[in-house]
Length: 113
Image (cartoon, rainbow, N blue to C red; front, side, top):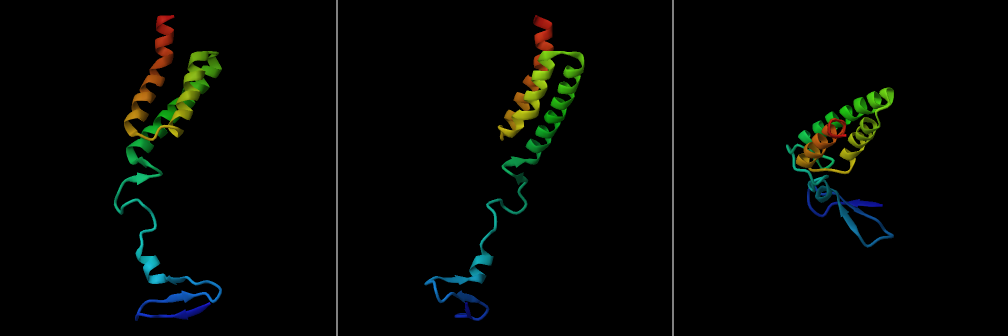
């Protein structure tokens, strides 16, 4: 590996076995991630989406434990679905809508059956 600089302030790594020059200054000037600085997006979810997913997953855990203790099968199924669905839904609006439907499902089944 040979170090040389064609422009002042630019370090170029030259590998004798390769024909490629890598400019470190150019590589450092490129953004490391696609997220813009100051954006509230993490892992494809907004902060609201992460909070809603966490809240509905917590509710799912409560539903699961309560349903398991009382033997309420619809509550257990709803709890498992509430625990798992945030992994597959990334839109905040859909997370909230699906979570509300799944949270109301055991009460609706109990009322209409």
